[in-house]
Amino acid sequence: MALTVSVVIPNYNYAKTLDACLSSVYGQTYPPHEVIVVDDHSTDGSREIAARFPCRTVVHPDNRGVSAARNTGAALATGDVLFFLDSDEALEPDAIANAVAILRDDPAVGCVHGVIAPEPLVDDGPVEWYRTLHAYWWRRRHAGPVRTAFFAQAAIRRSVFDEVGPFDEELRDSEDLEYSDRLAPRTRIVLSERVVARHDEVARLGPLLAEQFRRSQLLARTVLAARREGRASLTANRPAGILAVAGALGMLPLALVHPAFALGSALLVAVFAVCDIGLLRFVARHRGRRFLPFFLGVHLLLHVALVAGAVLGCVRLLLGHRPTRWLTPLVLVSAVVALGFTVRAAGTAPLVALSRPAGLPLLLAATATNLAGLLIGMVAWRVLVPVRGLPAARIFFLGQLGKYLPGRVWGVVTHVDLGRQAGAPAERMITAYLVSIGLTILAGAGVGLLAAPGPWILLPLVGFVALLVRPALLDRPVALVARLVRRPVTPLPRAAVRAALALALLSWLVSGLHLWALAVALGAPADRSAAVAVGAFALATVAGSLSIVAPDGWGVREFALAAALATVLPWGVAGTVALASRLVCVVVEIGTSLAVLGLARFLHRGESHVHAVHP
Image 1 (cartoon, rainbow, N blue to C red):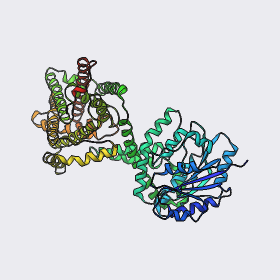
Image 2 (tube, helix red, strand yellow; image 1 turned 180 degrees about the vertical axis):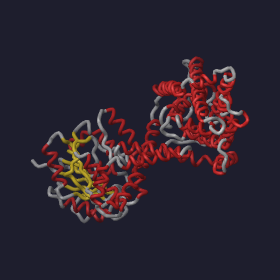
Image 3 (cartoon, rainbow, N blue to C red; image 1 turned 120 degrees about the vertical axis):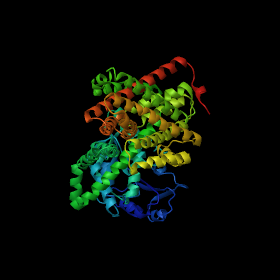
Image 4 (tube, helix red, strand yellow; image 1 turned 45 degrees about the vertical axis):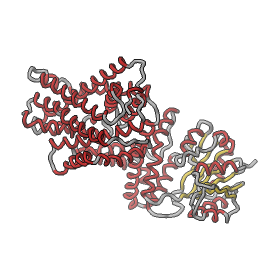
């Protein structure tokens, strides 16, 4: 008995292509049993176009998204097979016949979806050609059994759809990924080159990048789900290319420290360019070699949007969970590993040099000033949060240890998680963290004036003065970041912002004295090295914090410190001082954090931290 097919076409303002879409459906070699167009409250005359065809048209009273439109059509369909087709696509004449043949020949297959033709449905220019060629290539590369279905053109057995359930109507984008997570465990999915449709792709660069940025925010969740199930996720881009672009972006800010990082970033871009030679050959054959530079340029920008969206998705994923059980042990283990790595990297040279009778008092002074600067930094942060006492110290110092993990999200995750335990609202902790980071970087860059004088670096000083006068200048950038991570923020008292900025400046000045003491202990002239050491420590630490990949800016900070200290010390000795500084900082941070954590556990065992919250 022949399988009957119900074609379901969700449509929202696609009058441009709806006629071609419906014409392709009614021109199939395997005629559908019925065609249902679900108009999602279009305003462009789509309904008049649908009325010219013998299809059933259902109109939503308001715009509800593609998931809701597909569900409406599926609820009305009576066929054995549901063939979902987006209204910006036109099927090849044998598309439905080929999909039905695959379902008929293999009862284990529950869903068949197809590839995009290498020519656009409507030629709107080079950006659309980029998108079309890339879409054709990566889908064709993955043809065969897959774990992800794309329902722009896909056939699914009615029985399978009823078992899996409807599309998630809360999702207006990437709904295919969520549905595939439920579909793949229940049936086989096939991506077939025999099911082909021409697609009217995005024709402008801005919307294309915005779409990629939006969709890649689900990348972390998709990859993690795939790894948990021991399977490979279906991706449109080569993982090596994504990693190369991520590395290039991570190195780019470090070019401010040394031009070598700019060269490293350029080399990683070159690696990205050759990651998919087959794609480039295909593009050259299909559109000519002259099209390759444009194609590669758009491809690179798309990967930049992908990486940015994936990073934002990771932040949202972490902020959306409560990692209380594993967060503290993870941070502590990372700190201990960092200590071991620091001791091994520093070797015995700094300890031997500083253990001499003349050097020991200066080593103790370096430890004391670094500890004092760290405590002042904690006070600068604490004036911004509604938590006092040991709970506040616990949050700050454990958050400090989060920097020894790769990435820059662990600090805010720790603050939000531990702040929640202390009864502080997440939005207040996020606001305080973002403001504190901004003020710390600004103050550090300002102190860096001592080591790198020059007119261009006066900008941090201007910003410092502007924020002292008008703390409200922080509101917009903080609100922008909050919108990106989709977390609410709360305004901070202006007096608290001013106090935090002044204390951050003082923290840099005091903590930088430890580097001066170490430099003097190893032979630097005390009068000439004071300003250099204090400014270099602030500037190098800020530069290290801009490194996305290196935990706590490892390598970046040491290189910058050695380069600055080389003006008052031989290069080799300057490197030893930089390593000694790292060792002192790590020991002080870990020792203080462990002391605070132990004291908090001892004094508050079994007690709630709610009473530590200050309104």
